[in-house]
Amino acid sequence: MTKRILVIDDEDGVREIVKICLEATTNWEILTACSGPEGIEIALSEHPDAILLDVMMPSMDGPTTFKQLQTIAATCDIPTIFLTAKAQRSEQQRFRDLGVAGIITKPFLPETLAIDICKTLNWNDKTYMNANQDFCT
Image (cartoon, rainbow, N blue to C red; front, side):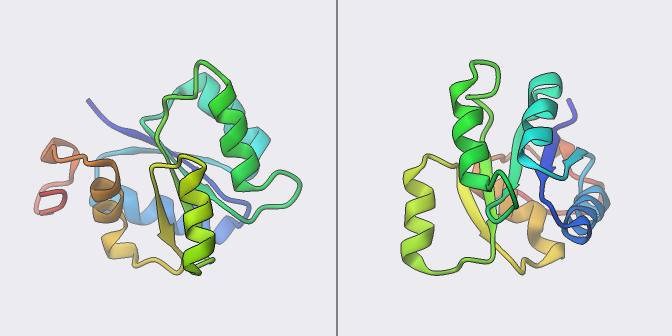
């Protein structure tokens, strides 16, 4: 069964890079949203297997979006990974304390993003990776 990942980021370039590199290295379906409210709407209708959520977004930031997702029965079980440029340990600890599945810092390495997601979510099944990829071992 194909995994579906929802990428919520206000920057067009980041969404596109994540989508391209994940599609190039996996057979995952990549959904995208440019804001917290749009991401919540897509999460409700599509129920992805995981969410990559930007921390810094206008109007509704990542932590606020995550908290809202946690209050909705249909989305509270979706593992969420924060994408953030904030590399300070104290900030990362604050994000972990919210209950996110993990944190991937920007800039990330496009060629290892799928590996980072797999490791964070403990996805060990290789069946969803593209042929000739040796990820998620």
